[in-house]
Amino acid sequence: MAKVKKSKENIEKNIIKDSSITRIFNTVSKELIKIGVPIPVKDIKKVGELKTRSKRVRGVTYTFKRITYNNINIDKTNYIGINKKLIEDNFEIEKTMVHELIHTIPGCNNHGPNFKKYAGLINRHYPKYNVSTYYTPDSDETENIANIKKPKYVVTCENCGAKTYFYRKCKTLDILSRCTCKKCKTSNFKVEKLG
Image (cartoon, rainbow, N blue to C red; front, side, top):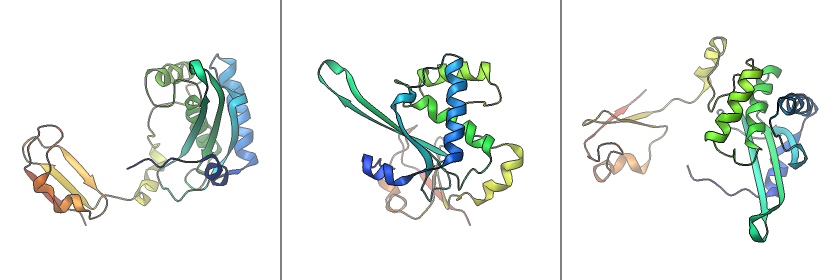
């Protein structure tokens, strides 16, 4: 999916101040700073509920930088939004907040080695948060997974068995004869329609 460039004004509208999320932010950020995680609290401009219809995004961090000469960051602003429609439990909000706070650290905007270094540090001191690069539901949450959209089509490479999932009928399914497999570079596909 193509990334849409977000403006500060749009993000300001999409993140609504929420006192319970702000309380969790203050508590969690103090815990992380106490163990040596360099959370740039002064750079975080807004924390709140994320207005979204997404059934997958639990939290998001937007970072804006203004760079002057010699690559010195003058103005860095972070916005953190938590999807309360998807997660209502305060402990789950805390876990998501920890993950998003790591993204505010310079060099941790993705799930690379810097992110994993701080996630490991937090997991050693606070194993209850169990920070990872992706979300895995607890066993009691698995019934909620049924509400998540399931794919309608599976395209399988008959040469190597690689699978690609599609959630709707699109042009790619119509032109599969012109496509090649990412793994084995052949174009021998089988399309299976699910339900």
